[in-house]
Image (tube, one colour):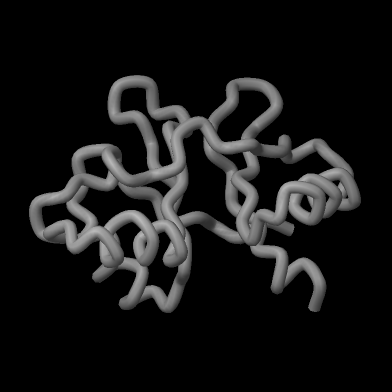
Amino acid sequence: RPKKPLVSSLDDTVLSVCQMLASKRSDASLIADSTSGGLAGIITEVDITRRVVSKQLDPSTTTIGSVMTPNPTCCQQSDPAMTALTIMVTNHFRHLPVLDAGDGSIVGILDIAKCLN
């Protein structure tokens, strides 16, 4: 079962998203397009390490939209669990966004560590 995702917007700073992730003890946030409300991307702790910290970007001025993974691979809420797990294992993903099959709205996020427990 997907957990309720933390959702950020494209214009949020890396610092504000990191503070949200820390306060919620989470390691990923889905990024919503404020215009359509649909999924624009995903940001994980690994992305932040590789794309912000290692490049010495200022997290208080860098927007999430500039460092996120855009248009991530997703599964639909109606997909079997094995389909989602196969996508994650095959592509070496730790997180997989889950969308509503009807309107494409954000439903949740799967974490491979929790799927395997």
